[in-house]
Length: 220
Image (cartoon, rainbow, N blue to C red):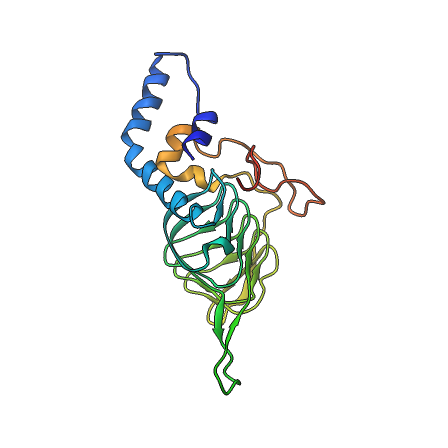
């Protein structure tokens, strides 16, 4: 992450007031930045694929970390994931504190109460709000919003807003394009890159091409 931030840092003339201001902010927020770096590094060392520009506050992974992939520009709060099956998080996804992603359960019709597992997919620009729960086999569509405390048991179509237990569609996200980079909202990252450093003009339903305004491979 530090290499990514240095390459994409705000630049000002050497020793100018702006240069001094930038570097003072970077030094002041360095402890928090190192915490984010450690969260990414510890899970990457266990096999997870996490983009350098993703920011993770605190992550608990139960299962095989190699099943986890997190795309560029994402920001994750205090999150718990069960990775007995694949968990694929796209680009520029926001996951708030208290969210749980659960890929496993039991077959209640089985006399041996067998485990059953299925992947979870969260597509680009989705937002999973505080204390929501996403259960096995669910795909959250591009740009969809899951309300706080919702329990998602079936797929959510792109740009839909869902809430409740079980979650039901309660609205639509009325937006045609996205121009934000969630990971840049964190103070230690903003000190390096500014807020939303790269604008995107990607339409809501692109035919092809990258979905997040980040100049890097999806995963490294």
